[in-house]
Amino acid sequence: MGLTPAPSPADHPGPPDAGPPDVGRLLTRPGAGLLLDLDGTLVDSEPVHREAFRAYFAQRDWPVDDDVVAQFAGRRAHEVFAALDGPWRGEDPHRLTAGVVAALGTATAEPVLVPGAAQLLAACTRTGLAVAVVTSAHRRWAADVVRRLGVDPDALPMVTADECRHGKPDPEPYRRGAQRLGLDPAGLVAAEDTPAGIASARAAGVGRVLGLTTTLAADRLRDAGAHVTAPDLRALARAVTARG
Image 1 (cartoon, rainbow, N blue to C red):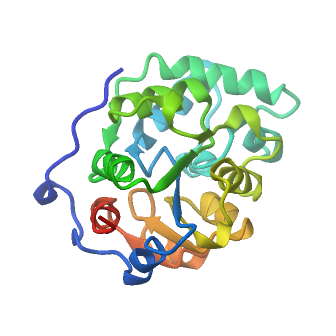
Image 2: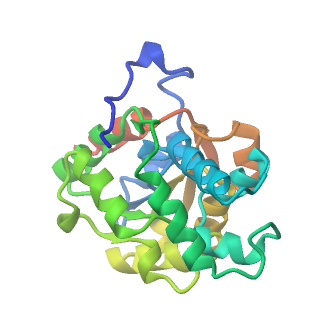
């Protein structure tokens, strides 16, 4: 499965310059760095994942509403299966997750790069800004996405579902991200698209959380604790580029 190119600004709704001046200022300070979610932040893959969940539930003859599927967004699937009541009650949540992952291979939807994602990672490399990916996805998926963004996954620090005892909204993933960079969370900026991810970053003490409206509306992200919102990563990429 490939990734389609990012649409042009005219194809993507929302003002391209949306984004906070305070985030740009924070990125110029000593100890600055970025912690980036993956799905919904660097790549819009929610349609792919929704299709996989629907396909797996259909295989099991389970009638599951879309609002239930939405509760898996931004979280490790096995933790949601374990906590959420449904027709899967009593089954091994890891085995259930493996079934959904297998269904990903048959999905017809194509993930789309979020506008500004590739430019942002390239700007971090050019300017030397510390950056890490913090995701609820497993490393294999994360590595594939990062590679298609033009970055060697072995050269980019990543915190994935495989290495955390607790997933988002627990603070562990973002605490690990800050530790991976060797930086104080208070000096970092996180980019997220779900309440679970925002809660994780805020609980870990991340200084600023940018909520991307790729999955939910801006008011939902602000209610979840995002300091500011933006439609995509273009403004953040420009802010990093402006560091020189």
